Length: 419
Image (tube, rainbow, N blue to C red; front, side):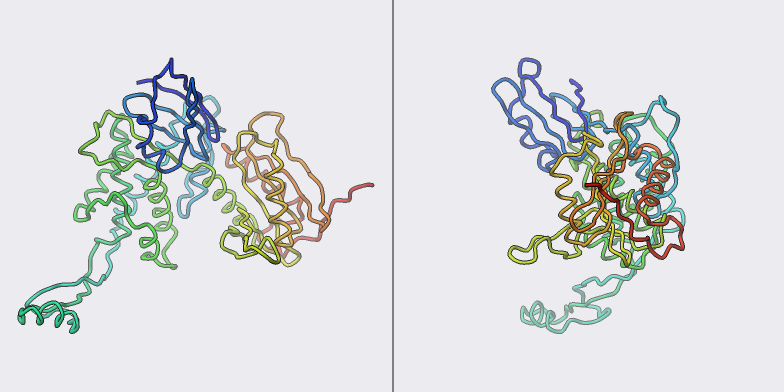
């Protein structure tokens, strides 16, 4: 099977004379259905265009396309920073050391955290179950009993609602679904401690069925708002795996056949930056999606949705995370989007945060708009947690937002532009 490579937000042209592909080869692939990549058919070639993902895309019987990180080691570095309760790794290895594929980093970390969860005892909850029985149990549903049984000449059968202490919860079904997918990928290679931990963990869930499409929204609601960080982090990683690994059943897939797997590295980059900023300052830091802040004062309802909002009394700071191929060479649409968000929020500071792709990439001050908002490009090393913290601290200082945990808010800093 042919192996090809591209990158996040990249494109790959495959000529038919090199690999005779047809639309039928791609139309039913899991990654096409999930809109991970798109295929544009031409007379002599097909162009595969990827989105904000890293991973492996399988065209069964034809080829495997590896989608590489723009900055090698991004997922390995940022994943422990991005998710609740998963802050373990602080720094990646020395440059030049061979790295595992990013999805292996994700799956092995999930196996280790799942084993930690199982080792202290899995959560059991009282859930309402409906029983149709001749022996009264729990609360009898009178209406259902009359409609379903008495009206059909079954007077001895009762419809009962029983609160049962069980481990078969939606949250655990999500964990099992993610674990089965992880086992499928990790089991193809050499046995590792993380794979062993994953399989030992699965034994604790032996009474919980595998669901190809678990209800993630219900699992999140089931945990509730007061769940500890470890459980929330486990759910977030499970969600990432369930949404990003092909769910073909084990019994119809050869274990040696590669599987399609993808990770939204753009989302990890954004989440890691938001959580690092929240650790550096005492001010509220949140995602702007769902705020309901309108872009326009009248007419169509268009909402602003910046990646990161830092609240402080003298006006918020707006940041957009852009894990893109051009690095610090931002495009006009990205700047215009940031300006629209800043105006909608009445921001005093706004910045685009991009990964360093070349040695020439550096921070830049872009200017001040008519409302007095300052705009910057902030370049960060996406594969170094220590450098990333220093770079964010440097921008916070320039922006007048103290990194001190006891900061009460930044001074009103504005760059002056000479006429």
